[in-house]
Image (cartoon, rainbow, N blue to C red; front, side):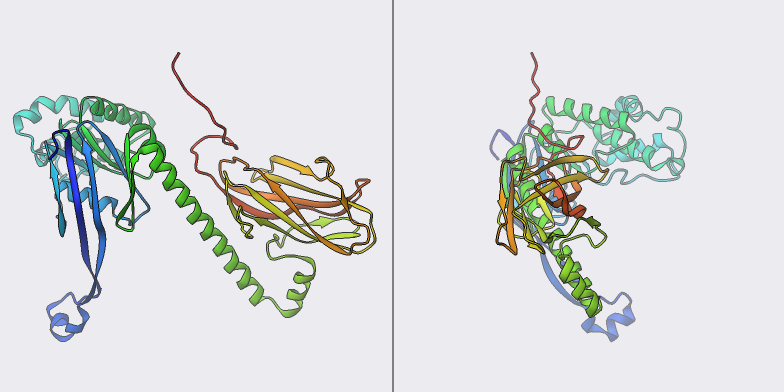
Length: 427
């Protein structure tokens, strides 16, 4: 190993046998031998990374990508098929909190059992016992059987043991949400102390804010392979951008299938009426009013590539495409749009008249108008689109208060409605 490293993972692979139909009894094994069909599923494929002493590193990725398997290989709960893992120092893992706890024994007795699993001697446990009890805040319950503990008390005791082992390497798998808000804050403070004292920390989590603020480095694993690794902020931004694209594609695909399903199940007459007056992207419960001299045949939400969608990213340029038809000759029309959140709060709104744009419709029977917007910088959620056509004298022709609902996928963990760039610094 390099002298500055505490962990070196080199080209590890790991596969599991996934049985499609496996006999469980001796009779089944004897009579139905063909049931033992299985497939080899590769969970990790040529994964490599290094962790320096005192460094906090995060393993990120979607569920099932191989993060927890990597952590279990580091704890030597299992071993890789190929490749090597080298580690220097005592290891403490917070993967299965409370592993080894006996429900009929008291909390005090279970401290000795659990700490011994981490390699502590009785003398070392005696020296740390008061610190463990104090950290868990279970003074009044420590001599009660663990089976009488609530799930939160159980987790607090297990966390208190693991965090006081004085390990050189700490492996954590998505268990930082322990106890109430005050206890969670104390856990994070303790983690910061361990990091400052030179403990190497490997963290598996889906909380990208924790990754950015706590970890100096991140490794993004996707389908068992390392996509990228480096500074946590850069890796998280790349990962969130990818996940947002996946979510937007999934939402749009689901809504497309739902629209197709509705169209197929409707009676022919209803389909004709819907095609004549409404578009598939419109909320069927939407109400509209006006003199119908001009009507909105369809208003589509387009992404930055110009494709009709039902979801956009909060930092994405988007478009609205109005397809309209005139039932009577008109010289000029005003097109408007507005966006409301789920609580009915008006986020933004404008029209062609306010923008200084004249839509001359003389001699036309139909047309198409494009509205282009810079990113909304919304924090994410469901929103409602309002769209309208009015005459130049403000008489409504076709006015929809709720034309369609759409989703904004945000990547920021902030409070409120919008995202804006801020900085924090000490003076």
